[in-house]
Length: 154
Image 1 (cartoon, rainbow, N blue to C red):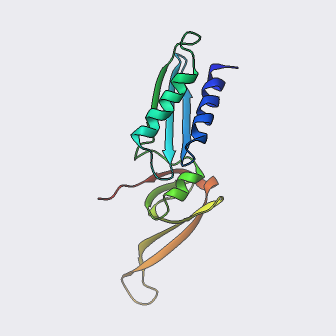
Image 2: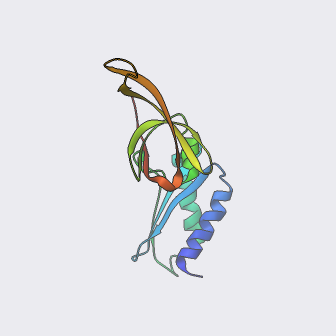
Image 3: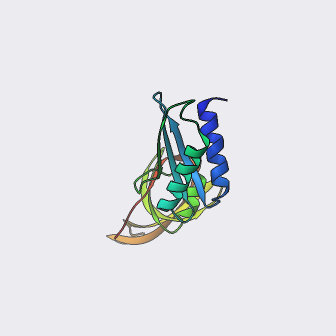
C-alpha cells in the first residue's frame, strides 16, 4: 500500500464519523507534504480540521514515512468542484464561467446534472425606445461550467 493510499484510507474512515464534512482535495507533494482541503454541508469548524488532523497523525507512522500535514477548509474564493458544493450554496450568488459566457447570478436550483441560475438583466424594450429590467433564468449543465465561485456580499 502506497503512502497516498494509506492517507486516503485513514481520511475516508475519519470522515465516516462526520457525514456533513466531505473531502475536496487531497494533495501529497514529492516532499510528502500532505494537504487536505475539506468542505461541509454546514461549513467546517476549526474542531473538524483538528479532529481530521489528529486522526491522520494517529494512524500514520512518521518512522515509516516522514511527512508534514496541513488540514484546512476551502477558502471563500475557492472554485466549486463538487455537485454537493453547488447544492449547499443554493440561494447564494455565484460567478459562473462557462464555455461561452460569464454570468453573475443567484443559484436557485442544483440537481445531479445541472444548475439553474436567476438574475435581473437590462434589455431593449419590445415596443418603443429604451430598456427594461427583466428576470432571466438559465439551466447550465455541469459539463459546460469551467469555473464557479461563490461571491461574498456584505
